[in-house]
Length: 263
Image 1 (cartoon, rainbow, N blue to C red):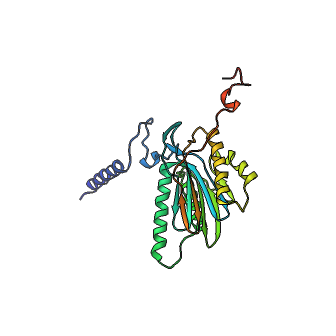
Image 2 (image 1 turned 120 degrees about the vertical axis):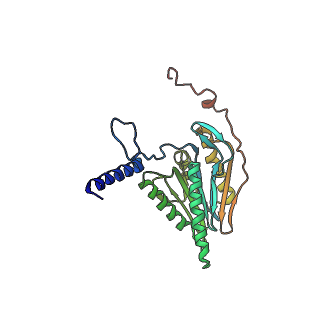
Image 3 (image 1 turned 30 degrees about the vertical axis):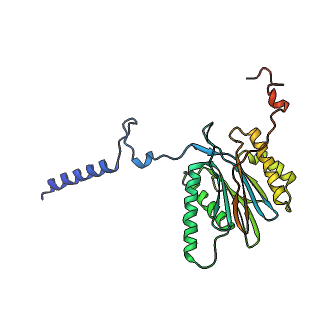
């Protein structure tokens, strides 16, 4: 092969390579690499609102409603946002529902891998919470976060555990936690009324009080909720039910009093 023919073949191969791995995009006269045009989740679509959880005398109690909002439209009314994880943990989530389903898939794989060891041990709530913190922080560093705030509670060997992790990997433990509007409206109630020796009935009553306040004040909340209990015996999730409400407060019947002239 002569030098001229060899150079022509090299030029043809180079053009073929560029056509394969470069996609022309109308942006002035430039040609951008397809990788530079990749997208990230910029806004969640179907979301769930607050989750509230507390420690009580025998374990963990957690409450959430069953609403799923498509933007500002309350599109779904039967979404369960609390799930048992393994033998010792209970997970609740607010935020994007599809991302929550992806997290549950990760946890299913984690628990399957743990069970395959068959060594008589199993992951506890602290280990699962640490795992979720790493997952959320890893996705945040890729600028492609899982759009959820997670609550993880559990009991193992008589030790109660309750923690939370945000969509950017910020995590902490506490005796009571709440996500979404609950972090602003329910936590003050919990700080005033929570105590370590709460009975099951007192804990449920306290959670119902928090959920009632959220129902009054959070437009995305609905009057259909579940309460989950986590003890050494395992997880029990209640059937959906509604709270008794009172809508005849003066501020509700005439909300514009004192605000005349405002839009």
